[in-house]
Length: 413
Image (cartoon, rainbow, N blue to C red):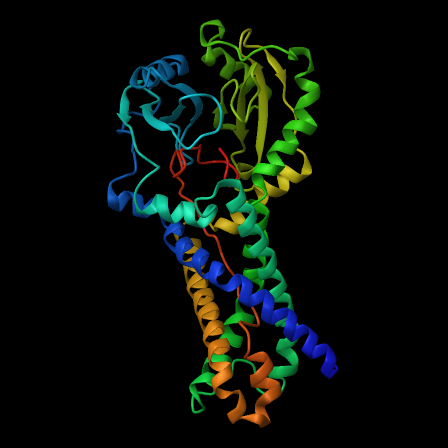
């Protein structure tokens, strides 16, 4: 490349890196414990497990399960109900003061076979809750998510520009060279470049999918406007169906299952909530295969008549959002994948930290080593070549740290 081109790419890399690096470090540090959210929950005793029973034990009616849950908080309404991702023996029922989205929720875990209350876990407090909220939205709701999405975009710019700069500044060194006998700054520069280029593909995937996940709330709102408007046209002007006028939820579930055979319930959204309409109980089903288990099939059931109104297929943009989650979270390969994700996360922390170190040290060494101005002054002046910021896995329990169902898109129930 020409000298002017190199300077231009170096400027882009420098400022895209500097703006996002602190936030990327925060996301890496908070994401690390979230990779092992499920395991940490077991160690802390916050996970809920159903007692063992013989195979084929009959399941209680969903109406009975919801009745038991409502009895624990009679002043609240049921927003969602969902089973854990790995079994169907528990229903996690999320209850709030109104159907509108809120952080004021209570979760009741009910045995799906005996309809007995197992626990009332709190997912809105403790260390893991703080890590989750910092990681997802900085405790700032939708504006926080969109801000982190912008930082993710800058991350991608920093990665691409770092790759462009990697070749001209490393062409005189063999791949993987770390000059341990040189000044500390050169050693960190080599390590920074090596880890950055090794984690390149993973960083691009995790960074891009993390950015996509921050758009989830807006994507879902657009889906409701784009797809559900026509379906809900006959109900225009009607109020949310009162609880006393609703039909059996168990019958609604059976009717919905007939529309989506060979699937499992991911979660149920009740009338008036963000994932349903004022007139429907909406059931979201997922497949049984590794890939289809990440895709959802919604079925809208009239809350009064318990008849299926529609079973629309998700549009491409929602499918893309759902497919991006396992790539981002690293929660589709069990413990081996979690360990790999954690190691890559740690490598990313080193890349980010070394990038900051190189930039802070640049002013102190720049004038002392003029012959290295091209390589050390430009390549070492910013966090590069890649400063990925993973946002690894959320928990795989029946409800996440924000009280919403576990099998769902990021930031929303």
